[in-house]
Image (cartoon, rainbow, N blue to C red; front, side, top):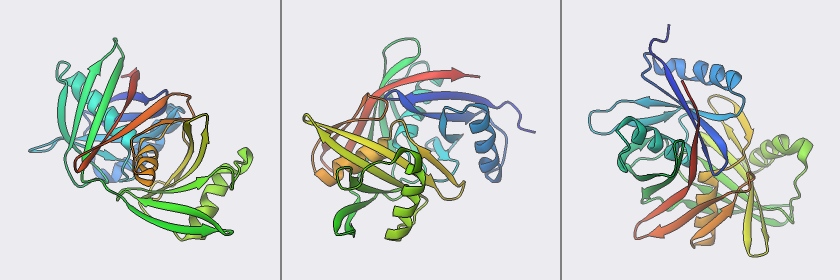
Length: 256
C-alpha cells in the first residue's frame, strides 16, 4: 500500500523523538493512520512528520498539522544527510508561514548540532489567571503554549496529562496543538516540563524535550535563554533582528 516508505528517527537534546517518513507514496488522508502505526511500532516517538517535495522548497508536514521546533530541526538533519552533508538549508514546515533557514554541523556519525532560524516569529502573548495566579498563553501560530509557574501549580506525576487538559479547557485555549509548560527556576537555570496535546490526531505526550516550548519561554522572558529539558540537556534560543534561532544537539537514533 505504501511503496518505498523510508523512516528516520531523530532526538533533540536527548529526547522528544521525531519520526520522519520520506520516499512515501500516499495521500495526506493517510497521515493520521501512519502516525498511529509509527507510534505503536516505536514507542519513543513523540511526533511524526512527512517529507513533502515542493517546487521551490521541500516541506515538513506534521501528522497533526502543528508547528514543532524539534521536528523542524530533525527535518534539517534529514535534508542534510540526503544532500551529502549540506550545511545550509531552506525549507518549509507546517504551522509556520515563512521559509525556515537551518544550519547543520555533523558532530559524529549519527550526531549533529542544528540551528533553525524563524523569521518574524514574535508570538502573541496573553495573560490569564487560574486561582488568582498569573499564567501566560503564548500563541506561536501552529501551537499555543500555556506557561505556568511550578511553585504555584505543583506537578502531580500520576495526573499530569489530565491536569494539562483541564488547564487547557479551563482557559478555553484551542489550537492545532496546545502545550502546558510547567516552569521552574533554580540555581540560575530554567527548567521546563512540557505536556503537549495535538487536536486532529488526539495525542498527548509528557514530552522529554520541547523546542517550541523553549521558544515560548524566550518570548515571555524577552531574552536569550538556555532551557533545561526533562531529558537533562539544554535547548537554546537567541534573538536576531526580526527573527529567533533555536538550537541544540540532535541525534539520529534509527534509520530504515
